[in-house]
Image (cartoon, rainbow over all chains, first blue to last red):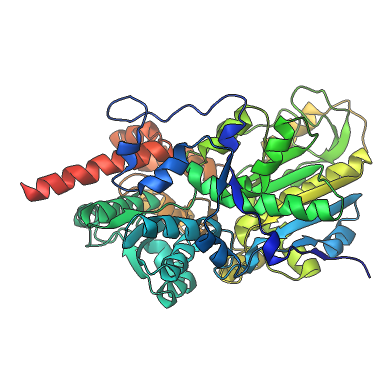
Length: 453
Length: 94
């Protein structure tokens, strides 16, 4: 019988998180305070975060012990299985072995509790009674609600009103876990009241929700704010994913050629990849890829022709669907993990060429997610579909190169409360890209004279 | 004329990378109250001529304000919001 899963016993769970800041070839530049222009100090963050988390935020210690109380909660579902996607491999028919970390089996259904739990714990230890946060679709809000319940903290989640109305199930999860989920803008804060005075029917935004959550934390004694992405301590907590994967792959004597994760705010990507970035810094030959969304069109609407794979014309001519190797929609070419909500650590690693960013169009990601569900069974979260699209892409590259590859990726969450998104995809409500005729004509001109496949 | 343009595009649906679910263009063009979401052009430009649409439907001042929107990084946002919340608290007390 072929092995499908590599498991760790409870006692094999990693006891420390890994802090990439200890190994960065060049250190992260400290953030500057917008009011003073001076580097941000602990006192600047103290109104919203407890000091023990601020210490982690700025720490350059390589290894940070995971408290026993956190490990006890992690053990409810961790260590997560390392799975081999044999059915998906068969479907792709490429020379790849695909392994994935199943982070969708947490109680909240995603990787988010990996940091929600330590954040709730450290706040509890610091004497905090109440946490506030903001959420969009609710993945983070629901994870923090559960974590607060585990440590006896109150939790108030400001959920963007349009999401509150469209995504009721995670709101219900928050309520089940005892949290207060409030549509934002609300009358509970001055920030919310200001918006409602000007726009009574405002559907809200993440910007408004975060303003409300921070004001709520500052206005109440013994209350703090919590964030599920971007910050250094969040990346740190998520490294449990990659550290477990390293132990599991060592058990079967395999090392990945490519490590991949989807990169929104950066936390699940950092979680799987940072321990491997450490290996790369120390000389290991491993490619690390972050997959992000783009509105760049799927190129399958262009002609199938021989073309260069890159703007510099360095690659051999490859048969592909092409809009011409010079096709770069203006606002997109500067993209690639530059979204302002991306974690500074991840952006820094891209700049240092330790990590590569690839972008995938929404229709490609849903197509990949459906392929996954129809072969491996599990329905991925739409965010997870991005990395699955990247895996498909990598497998195709391996096939073209005729090279065997081991791919490891982070299956960051299930999509059981995102089925409306799949419905929108399957019923054609998500827009396909309509390639303008002039673009097709331009693409054909760009490849004039090249051999035809 | 403007209303006709709204009718043409408002119902179009896309997955929002910020909120993590599907939204219509009607939301994107008023995400910031009077201002469209700063990502509007990046998200929609391959689906319809969104830049032309915004130029036609926003007045000059609003278009300029939209173009000036440069979302700061998250840490800057947090620090800025801490200062604003503290100032609001101070104002409430006095």
